[in-house]
Image 1 (cartoon, rainbow, N blue to C red):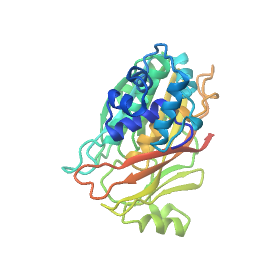
Image 2: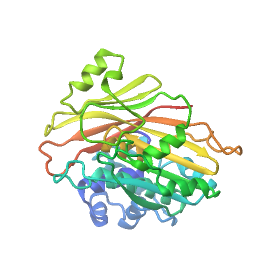
Image 3: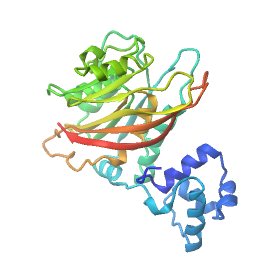
Length: 334
Protein backbone atom coordinates (compact mmCIF):
# COMPACT_ATOMS: atom_id res chain seq x y z
CA UNK A 1 0.00 0.00 0.00
CA UNK A 2 1.30 3.45 -0.75
CA UNK A 3 1.65 5.60 2.38
CA UNK A 4 -0.44 8.57 1.23
CA UNK A 5 -3.68 6.69 0.65
CA UNK A 6 -6.52 7.63 2.96
CA UNK A 7 -8.45 5.24 5.18
CA UNK A 8 -11.51 5.98 3.06
CA UNK A 9 -9.88 4.83 -0.16
CA UNK A 10 -8.24 1.82 1.52
CA UNK A 11 -11.59 0.58 2.83
CA UNK A 12 -13.17 1.12 -0.60
CA UNK A 13 -10.41 -0.97 -2.19
CA UNK A 14 -10.93 -3.75 0.35
CA UNK A 15 -14.67 -3.62 -0.25
CA UNK A 16 -14.13 -3.84 -4.01
CA UNK A 17 -11.84 -6.87 -3.73
CA UNK A 18 -13.76 -8.76 -1.03
CA UNK A 19 -17.34 -7.59 -1.76
CA UNK A 20 -17.86 -7.23 1.99
CA UNK A 21 -21.11 -5.58 3.07
CA UNK A 22 -21.14 -3.15 5.99
CA UNK A 23 -22.32 -6.05 8.15
CA UNK A 24 -19.39 -8.08 6.81
CA UNK A 25 -16.96 -5.33 7.81
CA UNK A 26 -18.56 -5.23 11.25
CA UNK A 27 -18.31 -9.00 11.61
CA UNK A 28 -14.64 -9.18 10.57
CA UNK A 29 -13.35 -6.00 12.26
CA UNK A 30 -15.61 -5.67 15.27
CA UNK A 31 -16.26 -1.99 14.44
CA UNK A 32 -19.87 -0.83 14.28
CA UNK A 33 -21.11 -0.98 10.67
CA UNK A 34 -22.51 2.56 10.88
CA UNK A 35 -19.02 3.86 11.58
CA UNK A 36 -17.60 1.74 8.75
CA UNK A 37 -20.26 3.13 6.41
CA UNK A 38 -19.34 6.71 7.30
CA UNK A 39 -15.64 5.97 6.72
CA UNK A 40 -16.29 4.43 3.29
CA UNK A 41 -18.89 6.96 2.17
CA UNK A 42 -18.39 10.15 4.23
CA UNK A 43 -21.47 12.33 4.55
CA UNK A 44 -19.94 15.01 6.76
CA UNK A 45 -21.68 13.79 9.91
CA UNK A 46 -19.78 13.71 13.17
CA UNK A 47 -17.93 10.40 13.54
CA UNK A 48 -16.98 9.15 17.01
CA UNK A 49 -14.22 6.54 17.07
CA UNK A 50 -13.10 5.05 20.40
CA UNK A 51 -9.59 3.77 21.16
CA UNK A 52 -11.00 0.24 20.93
CA UNK A 53 -12.38 1.07 17.46
CA UNK A 54 -8.95 2.17 16.27
CA UNK A 55 -7.30 -0.96 17.66
CA UNK A 56 -9.89 -3.24 16.01
CA UNK A 57 -9.70 -1.38 12.72
CA UNK A 58 -5.89 -1.54 12.70
CA UNK A 59 -5.92 -5.31 13.32
CA UNK A 60 -8.42 -5.67 10.47
CA UNK A 61 -6.25 -3.57 8.11
CA UNK A 62 -3.12 -5.56 9.02
CA UNK A 63 -4.92 -8.61 7.69
CA UNK A 64 -5.09 -6.76 4.38
CA UNK A 65 -1.40 -5.71 4.31
CA UNK A 66 -1.99 -2.20 5.63
CA UNK A 67 -1.82 -0.27 8.90
CA UNK A 68 -3.19 2.93 10.40
CA UNK A 69 0.39 3.82 11.32
CA UNK A 70 1.17 4.82 7.70
CA UNK A 71 -2.17 6.43 6.83
CA UNK A 72 -3.56 9.91 7.36
CA UNK A 73 -7.14 9.41 8.47
CA UNK A 74 -8.66 11.30 5.58
CA UNK A 75 -7.32 12.24 2.15
CA UNK A 76 -5.62 15.69 2.17
CA UNK A 77 -8.24 18.00 0.66
CA UNK A 78 -5.94 20.88 -0.39
CA UNK A 79 -6.12 20.20 -4.13
CA UNK A 80 -9.90 19.91 -4.22
CA UNK A 81 -10.73 22.62 -1.72
CA UNK A 82 -8.39 25.06 -3.50
CA UNK A 83 -10.18 24.47 -6.78
CA UNK A 84 -13.63 24.72 -5.26
CA UNK A 85 -12.76 27.96 -3.48
CA UNK A 86 -12.09 29.23 -6.98
CA UNK A 87 -15.25 27.81 -8.59
CA UNK A 88 -18.06 25.37 -7.80
CA UNK A 89 -18.79 24.94 -11.53
CA UNK A 90 -16.93 21.66 -12.27
CA UNK A 91 -17.27 19.44 -15.35
CA UNK A 92 -15.52 16.10 -15.90
CA UNK A 93 -15.35 14.52 -19.36
CA UNK A 94 -14.34 10.88 -19.75
CA UNK A 95 -13.83 8.67 -22.78
CA UNK A 96 -16.27 5.80 -23.26
CA UNK A 97 -14.98 3.21 -25.71
CA UNK A 98 -14.44 -0.48 -26.42
CA UNK A 99 -10.80 -1.35 -25.87
CA UNK A 100 -11.07 -4.51 -27.97
CA UNK A 101 -14.06 -4.31 -30.34
CA UNK A 102 -16.66 -7.03 -29.71
CA UNK A 103 -14.57 -8.49 -26.88
CA UNK A 104 -14.22 -5.94 -24.10
CA UNK A 105 -16.90 -3.66 -22.70
CA UNK A 106 -16.15 -0.42 -20.86
CA UNK A 107 -13.49 -1.58 -18.42
CA UNK A 108 -13.73 -1.56 -14.65
CA UNK A 109 -10.73 0.77 -14.31
CA UNK A 110 -12.42 3.31 -16.58
CA UNK A 111 -15.53 3.38 -14.42
CA UNK A 112 -13.58 3.37 -11.17
CA UNK A 113 -11.23 6.15 -12.29
CA UNK A 114 -14.00 8.41 -13.53
CA UNK A 115 -16.13 7.88 -10.45
CA UNK A 116 -13.21 8.15 -8.01
CA UNK A 117 -12.21 11.64 -9.10
CA UNK A 118 -15.81 12.89 -8.99
CA UNK A 119 -16.35 11.28 -5.56
CA UNK A 120 -13.15 12.86 -4.24
CA UNK A 121 -14.36 16.30 -5.27
CA UNK A 122 -17.73 15.70 -3.68
CA UNK A 123 -16.41 14.21 -0.42
CA UNK A 124 -13.64 16.77 0.05
CA UNK A 125 -15.70 19.83 -0.80
CA UNK A 126 -19.39 19.01 -0.63
CA UNK A 127 -19.68 20.10 -4.28
CA UNK A 128 -21.48 18.11 -6.93
CA UNK A 129 -19.73 17.70 -10.28
CA UNK A 130 -21.01 17.13 -13.78
CA UNK A 131 -19.71 13.83 -15.25
CA UNK A 132 -20.12 13.40 -19.01
CA UNK A 133 -18.94 10.71 -21.42
CA UNK A 134 -17.23 11.69 -24.67
CA UNK A 135 -17.15 9.27 -27.62
CA UNK A 136 -13.75 7.82 -28.48
CA UNK A 137 -11.80 8.68 -31.60
CA UNK A 138 -11.31 5.49 -33.60
CA UNK A 139 -9.57 6.47 -36.83
CA UNK A 140 -10.84 10.08 -36.79
CA UNK A 141 -8.93 12.29 -39.23
CA UNK A 142 -10.21 15.83 -38.65
CA UNK A 143 -9.77 17.90 -35.51
CA UNK A 144 -12.65 20.03 -34.29
CA UNK A 145 -12.66 21.60 -30.85
CA UNK A 146 -15.60 20.36 -28.73
CA UNK A 147 -18.38 22.88 -28.27
CA UNK A 148 -18.33 22.34 -24.48
CA UNK A 149 -14.73 23.56 -24.29
CA UNK A 150 -15.39 26.58 -26.52
CA UNK A 151 -18.34 27.59 -24.38
CA UNK A 152 -16.39 27.23 -21.13
CA UNK A 153 -13.53 29.40 -22.39
CA UNK A 154 -15.88 32.08 -23.75
CA UNK A 155 -18.30 32.16 -20.83
CA UNK A 156 -16.31 34.65 -18.78
CA UNK A 157 -17.20 32.64 -15.66
CA UNK A 158 -14.85 30.83 -13.31
CA UNK A 159 -15.14 27.20 -14.38
CA UNK A 160 -13.13 24.00 -13.91
CA UNK A 161 -12.98 21.51 -16.79
CA UNK A 162 -11.36 18.07 -16.38
CA UNK A 163 -10.75 15.59 -19.19
CA UNK A 164 -9.79 11.95 -18.54
CA UNK A 165 -8.36 9.97 -21.48
CA UNK A 166 -5.30 9.80 -23.73
CA UNK A 167 -4.96 12.31 -26.61
CA UNK A 168 -5.15 9.55 -29.20
CA UNK A 169 -8.52 8.45 -27.83
CA UNK A 170 -10.20 11.56 -26.42
CA UNK A 171 -11.07 14.61 -28.51
CA UNK A 172 -11.62 16.63 -25.32
CA UNK A 173 -8.14 15.76 -24.02
CA UNK A 174 -6.52 16.61 -27.36
CA UNK A 175 -8.37 19.94 -27.51
CA UNK A 176 -7.53 20.82 -23.88
CA UNK A 177 -3.85 19.93 -24.28
CA UNK A 178 -3.64 22.08 -27.41
CA UNK A 179 -5.18 24.98 -25.48
CA UNK A 180 -2.96 24.41 -22.45
CA UNK A 181 0.28 24.16 -24.43
CA UNK A 182 -0.75 26.81 -26.97
CA UNK A 183 2.30 28.08 -28.86
CA UNK A 184 4.80 27.15 -26.13
CA UNK A 185 7.76 25.03 -27.24
CA UNK A 186 7.18 22.12 -24.86
CA UNK A 187 8.72 18.65 -25.05
CA UNK A 188 5.69 16.43 -24.40
CA UNK A 189 4.85 13.34 -26.43
CA UNK A 190 3.24 9.90 -26.40
CA UNK A 191 4.74 6.92 -28.24
CA UNK A 192 2.82 3.69 -28.87
CA UNK A 193 4.37 0.75 -30.74
CA UNK A 194 1.03 -0.75 -31.77
CA UNK A 195 -0.63 0.21 -35.04
CA UNK A 196 -4.21 0.39 -33.84
CA UNK A 197 -6.25 3.06 -35.60
CA UNK A 198 -6.09 6.26 -33.61
CA UNK A 199 -6.73 9.95 -33.87
CA UNK A 200 -3.81 11.86 -35.37
CA UNK A 201 -2.88 13.71 -32.20
CA UNK A 202 -0.47 16.63 -32.20
CA UNK A 203 1.25 14.90 -29.26
CA UNK A 204 1.62 11.49 -30.93
CA UNK A 205 5.20 10.49 -31.87
CA UNK A 206 6.71 7.59 -33.76
CA UNK A 207 9.01 5.10 -31.96
CA UNK A 208 11.82 6.12 -34.36
CA UNK A 209 11.79 9.58 -32.73
CA UNK A 210 13.33 8.11 -29.57
CA UNK A 211 17.08 8.86 -29.62
CA UNK A 212 18.02 5.96 -27.34
CA UNK A 213 18.36 2.68 -29.25
CA UNK A 214 17.91 0.75 -25.99
CA UNK A 215 14.57 2.42 -25.14
CA UNK A 216 13.37 2.27 -28.75
CA UNK A 217 14.15 -1.47 -29.02
CA UNK A 218 12.50 -2.19 -25.66
CA UNK A 219 9.26 -0.49 -26.72
CA UNK A 220 9.01 -1.91 -30.22
CA UNK A 221 10.07 -5.37 -29.07
CA UNK A 222 7.56 -5.64 -26.21
CA UNK A 223 5.00 -7.82 -28.04
CA UNK A 224 3.94 -4.82 -30.06
CA UNK A 225 2.32 -3.32 -26.94
CA UNK A 226 5.16 -1.16 -25.62
CA UNK A 227 4.74 2.58 -25.11
CA UNK A 228 6.48 5.59 -23.65
CA UNK A 229 5.72 9.04 -22.30
CA UNK A 230 8.27 11.76 -23.11
CA UNK A 231 8.50 14.79 -20.82
CA UNK A 232 11.39 17.25 -21.15
CA UNK A 233 13.57 14.67 -22.89
CA UNK A 234 12.96 11.97 -20.27
CA UNK A 235 11.24 8.76 -21.35
CA UNK A 236 8.90 6.86 -19.04
CA UNK A 237 8.39 3.48 -20.69
CA UNK A 238 5.64 0.92 -20.26
CA UNK A 239 6.41 -2.69 -21.17
CA UNK A 240 3.23 -4.73 -20.61
CA UNK A 241 3.18 -8.41 -19.79
CA UNK A 242 2.55 -11.03 -22.45
CA UNK A 243 -1.08 -11.21 -23.48
CA UNK A 244 -3.12 -13.49 -21.21
CA UNK A 245 -0.14 -13.78 -18.82
CA UNK A 246 -0.37 -13.16 -15.09
CA UNK A 247 2.14 -10.44 -14.23
CA UNK A 248 2.71 -7.01 -12.72
CA UNK A 249 4.19 -4.10 -14.63
CA UNK A 250 4.46 -0.29 -14.54
CA UNK A 251 2.76 2.31 -16.68
CA UNK A 252 2.67 6.10 -16.60
CA UNK A 253 0.23 8.97 -16.79
CA UNK A 254 0.59 12.73 -16.94
CA UNK A 255 -1.65 15.50 -15.63
CA UNK A 256 -1.32 19.00 -17.16
CA UNK A 257 -3.12 21.97 -15.60
CA UNK A 258 -3.45 25.59 -16.59
CA UNK A 259 -5.67 28.58 -15.92
CA UNK A 260 -6.73 30.29 -19.15
CA UNK A 261 -8.74 33.46 -18.58
CA UNK A 262 -11.11 32.35 -15.81
CA UNK A 263 -11.20 28.66 -16.77
CA UNK A 264 -9.07 25.99 -15.06
CA UNK A 265 -8.22 23.17 -17.52
CA UNK A 266 -7.06 19.80 -16.12
CA UNK A 267 -6.06 17.06 -18.57
CA UNK A 268 -5.37 13.49 -17.37
CA UNK A 269 -3.70 11.14 -19.88
CA UNK A 270 -2.09 7.71 -19.53
CA UNK A 271 -0.19 5.29 -21.73
CA UNK A 272 -3.06 2.86 -21.17
CA UNK A 273 -6.43 2.84 -19.44
CA UNK A 274 -5.27 1.76 -15.97
CA UNK A 275 -2.54 4.43 -16.00
CA UNK A 276 -5.09 7.08 -16.91
CA UNK A 277 -7.45 5.84 -14.21
CA UNK A 278 -4.73 5.65 -11.56
CA UNK A 279 -3.54 9.18 -12.33
CA UNK A 280 -7.09 10.55 -12.23
CA UNK A 281 -7.72 8.96 -8.84
CA UNK A 282 -4.62 10.64 -7.37
CA UNK A 283 -5.07 14.26 -8.43
CA UNK A 284 -5.01 15.24 -4.76
CA UNK A 285 -1.24 14.73 -4.63
CA UNK A 286 -0.49 17.60 -7.02
CA UNK A 287 0.68 20.96 -5.64
CA UNK A 288 -1.33 23.69 -7.36
CA UNK A 289 -0.30 26.62 -5.16
CA UNK A 290 1.01 28.54 -8.22
CA UNK A 291 -2.07 27.90 -10.33
CA UNK A 292 -4.36 30.80 -9.53
CA UNK A 293 -3.40 34.17 -11.00
CA UNK A 294 -5.12 37.51 -11.36
CA UNK A 295 -3.61 38.03 -14.82
CA UNK A 296 -5.88 35.39 -16.30
CA UNK A 297 -3.18 32.95 -17.41
CA UNK A 298 -1.07 30.72 -15.17
CA UNK A 299 2.07 28.67 -15.77
CA UNK A 300 1.46 25.12 -16.97
CA UNK A 301 1.63 22.69 -14.04
CA UNK A 302 2.48 19.08 -14.93
CA UNK A 303 2.81 15.92 -12.88
CA UNK A 304 3.89 12.40 -13.90
CA UNK A 305 2.42 9.38 -12.10
CA UNK A 306 3.80 5.83 -12.05
CA UNK A 307 1.05 3.22 -11.83
CA UNK A 308 1.55 -0.41 -10.78
CA UNK A 309 -0.75 -2.68 -12.81
CA UNK A 310 -1.54 -6.33 -12.20
CA UNK A 311 -2.64 -8.25 -15.29
CA UNK A 312 -4.73 -11.32 -14.58
CA UNK A 313 -4.13 -14.42 -16.69
CA UNK A 314 -6.66 -15.40 -19.38
CA UNK A 315 -8.75 -12.33 -18.74
CA UNK A 316 -10.67 -12.33 -22.04
CA UNK A 317 -13.35 -11.38 -22.82
CA UNK A 318 -13.33 -9.07 -19.78
CA UNK A 319 -10.50 -6.62 -19.21
CA UNK A 320 -9.64 -6.97 -15.53
CA UNK A 321 -6.26 -5.26 -15.37
CA UNK A 322 -6.00 -4.02 -11.81
CA UNK A 323 -4.43 -0.79 -10.54
CA UNK A 324 -2.40 -1.83 -7.49
CA UNK A 325 -0.85 1.51 -6.50
CA UNK A 326 0.03 4.94 -7.87
CA UNK A 327 2.93 7.27 -7.09
CA UNK A 328 3.65 10.87 -8.02
CA UNK A 329 7.18 10.60 -9.42
CA UNK A 330 7.81 14.10 -10.75
CA UNK A 331 6.14 17.52 -10.88
CA UNK A 332 7.15 20.75 -12.56
CA UNK A 333 5.91 23.71 -14.56
CA UNK A 334 6.36 25.19 -18.02
